[in-house]
Image (cartoon, rainbow, N blue to C red):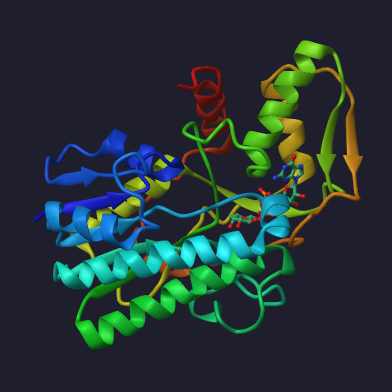
Length: 301
Ligand code: GFB
């Protein structure tokens, strides 16, 4: 039983690599295969012959990057996803486990978000390209499940963070962006600029927690419906800034720049399905996750 994991260099891929003991896992990343190139993708799948594909590779970014480049986010994610499914069909894979995120849900959904409301309305404008590519991933999965008998599990984490962020990217997600801003401001004695009013709220899930859930699902449970993965704890960006300032001993000023994009005000999601499947799962406490993320930043490769 060979399991192919794409996106192995990413936030979640790196977390999975650290906890996988089994030797039937093949971790791949863009150094080995350009998933935007169909021939490369088929070549890799024919070499590995996976029966399960855990498809983590995606073009991701924070609210600013998503607002600026909707075409890139839609096109590059669509291309990768189509190639992965075509190659999976060629090698007759049994199952594909793929990922969306709670930012792909309708902007005006009922709260807390539940998995099957994902297509019930347009996503927040800032996520247009990424959200529709991820929604089309769900359509790809369901249609392949029906026609080509390839099982499909869609996992939908809330905002993920962790030590294996791509620390070099401009306009990443809020936690790595703020850690870099505070670190720079500490050295230069300047203030930090935070986007928005601070009122926006997010649920932050630690990458290693999502990795543990993913491996459990790959091993034991072929999900019938998409599964939201969240610790159900909303925190405001203002609270996040306060915790990071404390953990990083920053004593400068915080400037709130409300002309910068704030994205959705909040996107609380339901833990109901998750708790039914994983009644005893312990999520990493937020401060502990942040401390591990900080050491990832300090020791970045
Ligand atoms: O992490 P973030 O970019 O993603 O922004 P989203 C979260 C919140 O943090 C927003 C605020 O309200 C931002 O305005 N924020 C404050 C900052 N300062 C900063 C900063 O310096 N950098 C960033 N990036 N944010 C993402 C989607 O939306 O959700 C992705 O864009 C992805 O596609 C992810 O799906 C889960 O939560 O707003």
